[in-house]
Image (cartoon, rainbow, N blue to C red; front, side, top):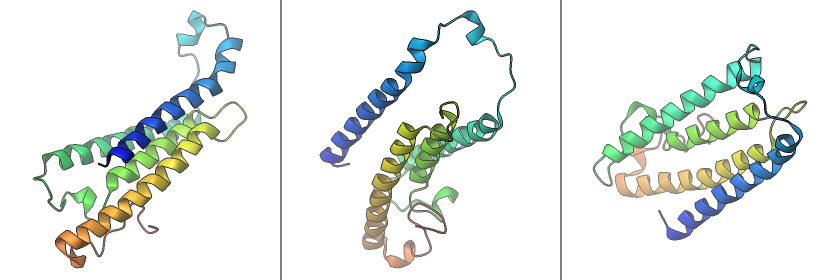
Length: 158
């Protein structure tokens, strides 16, 4: 990882954290916290029922991909099933995580949380560029045939 890329990541997480905090401040200051807030008295919404498992599955896939990559001998072409059709499935999982969070954290009356949707867009573009660079590196290192049938990050699209 390049030093500049590392700094960009730190700046992104700092900015995203501050932006989410600022966006949520209004709700926090207008709502008095009581014990009723920690009781589960209503059924999950359809949004929660769909997006929470999506978040958990994407998080699990991302963890598995990172664990697999960590176990590889340095500069080895990944052969794990998640890497057979996608060069960077852990990037795909990261994007799904942000998308599910943008949907889950939507304010009342809104379809998405705009701050987290912006994070999703940034992460998708940033990791998309990195995935394309990774695929080119794999082609140079292992030959074009090694990754010719693999998508960069989004199956069927990119």
